[in-house]
Amino acid sequence: MEKLDIVDVIRTKRDGGRLSPEQIAWTVDAYTRGVVKDEQMAALAMAIFLRGMDRQEVSQWTQAMIDSGEKMDFSVLSRPTADKHSTGGVGDKTTLPLAPLVASFGVAVPQLSGRGLGHTGGTLDKLESIPGWRADLSNAEILHQLGDGSGAVICAAGAGLAPADKKLYALRDITSTVDCLPLIASSIMSKKIAEGTGSLVLDVKVGSGAFMKDLDSARDLARAMVDLGQDAGVRTFAFLTDMSTPLGLKVGNALEVAESVEVLAGGGPADVVELTLALARKMLEMAGQSDVDVEAALKDGRAMDRWRTMIREQGGDPDAPLPRARHTHEVLAPGDGVLERLDALAVGVASWRLGAGRAVKEDPVQAGAGIEIHAKPGDRVRKGQALLTLHTDDPWRFERALEALEGSLTVGQGPVPAHSVVLGHVQ
Image 1 (spheres, helix red, strand yellow):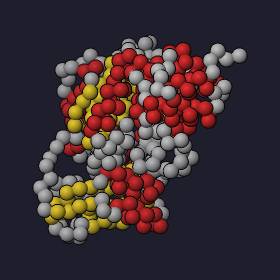
Image 2 (tube, one colour):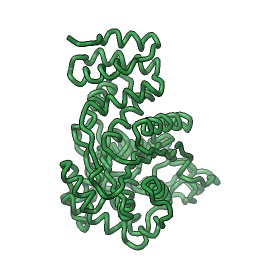
Image 3 (cartoon, helix red, strand yellow):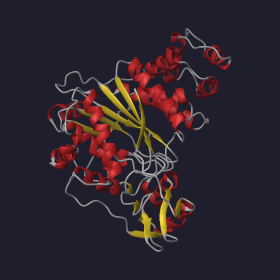
Image 4 (tube, helix red, strand yellow):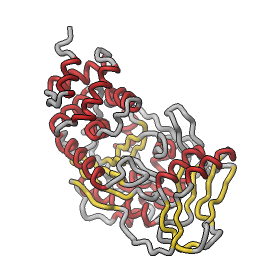
């Protein structure tokens, strides 16, 4: 005999009421156990979508998600821990250089990551383009790598972390309740808090290639996630960063690994370096290291050494050639002038159609597929100059990728005002 009735819970939220801690804890637990059925949880999710939740409700919902599974414990480590989460974008590769960079200062980085879906790339897909590298590690392997190894781990989250969220996310995806701020915030933060990190820096993307299209909605999401982290005792800070145009000059899997290695070697595109350094400084500050020369660790090879060790620890060969696509196609400038716009969403969709991403989680991805960018907004271009190079193993994919890019590039007379990739922050 269940102590509560899901119909009463649905009715409470449908009518604009506030769910009690007992109702929330029971609902999430009962859904995880299968007592609450999908159609009932779908009705509650829609009621939450329409009626919202206050801060206390979202905090309790998040805690119930965490309590549905295991929680990792890094208290045995002699190093402080710091983690980063991005809400996803196009060319968003900062995790790759960031984790070894922060680890080079003695801070453990448990970066449990995911795979790409739709136009946003997945960190694990990128790293799996490195021959031999493996994403699945046991908890014991994670602890060993953080404590006695490189100090950085980028791997798949175990099935035991917040299983209620995994089940609910799949339901939200087919019931048009994905874009619900309380459920977005609790979904992200339940997994991040369950990972057991001591501090967390969030990178909340804003713009066409991001989930949040405008600064106000991105700030609302950042505020909700920062509050959830602090309520759970995790030091949390959020950057708001631009995703109106792709980050860096390469979009794809192996292509983004190559660009990340450029950053670790002390080079790389200015926007990727700027964001990597900003995230690293904040992660180190929150882990107790305020006065450190982060840029020097990229220049002198310390971060690169950590990268190579981290890749080897997970079975990869950092010296192996990265996969290359068999076919390429260039997109040319239509005239002389200044590139005024390069739309992130269009580039992301085109890269996905070239084979770099997936439509459903079971789809395979091509390691070498993606897009190289030869000019960014503000650059002067000449008619016939290559603006983009498309990469794929299947030439039949070019037509649909080019369709996605229609209208995404604007060449005019400029100028294009320069701006930082970091648009603001929430703490």
